Length: 75
Picture 1: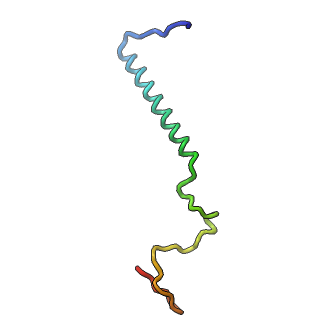
Picture 2 (picture 1 turned 120 degrees about the horizontal axis):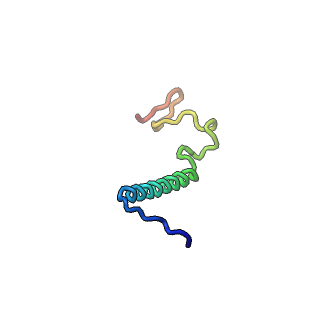
Picture 3 (picture 1 turned 135 degrees about the vertical axis):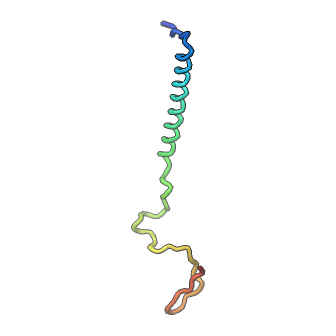
């Protein structure tokens, strides 16, 4: 329907058109991937209500025993 597009006899023009189509397809895929990432919650979301209400001192050490004036840790 309407006018058919002119097919170029220049090989460079055809190659350029193919390259542009590939760039367009890659760009659409990247935008779709970014849109999907935007829908997800941030990775830093810890499940706590806010940063202010988190525990103050969280360390990698296990408490071995509690004494009246000291705490023994497993290092």
